[in-house]
Image (cartoon, rainbow, N blue to C red; front, top):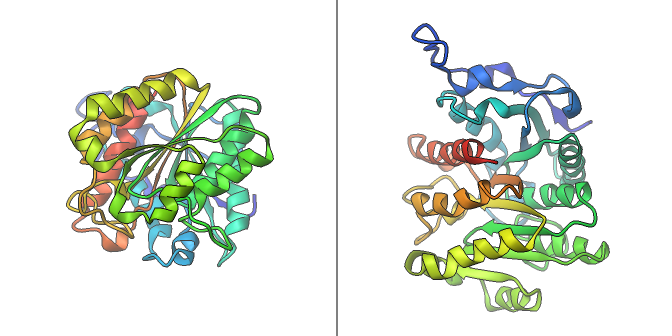
Length: 318
């Protein structure tokens, strides 16, 4: 795979407490690492993939830097304690964009995801801008033809833009068009949407596409009546679930390290209340964390918050 690279061992380093007890372990000591892309040959059932790309952010006129996200998040994960579920993780390397060739990178990610899924591995992808979601989501659709896949996006933005080319603002319109081409239903739920950050044209497109929306204010004030029923509906209605988490859904005070920080946002503790039932549902097939931009982090706070989300997902995933 031309755009694929194995993860350097130097990214997975941390404090060694193993002299204290055999189970005093951290992720860098329990994660397997692929030297070549052959998911069927690797242990574990959670494939960690990087998508080192922010060409979509550049095209969307955002602040670039998310291409360095996968490496930074791996470093943040490496020193976290390894508990139940974490020994199932295998680092399957990173897809990188070659210059401005986003479409080629999308295809490479799509194929890598489909290969991992067909090998019996669920995929946990570290972006990269939210253009990650098209390659990831398309790979899931390819791996499970004929099955109903529900897409759940935790995001301040609908990302349904009309544009001449793919960007970080277009992934769900692209997935909708992909579903149209395959004569599949487009099942899209967006939770945490900021009305202030999406034009009326985007709301109109969401209505036309029958997108289920829970706004940020509703998450904060009506969690039990608006969020939980939506999660239960997705779990009951679909064969597989794909969860994509744009880290700009978090408040800027918790996640400064994104292209478009949120003035309001959904706090981390609340976000984890959304993630947990999906992880435990038995239907969650794929997750990504996107838009982390280390250039705008403050004392590593954003990296630690994002890493905690990824850590928690691997711990809860059933």
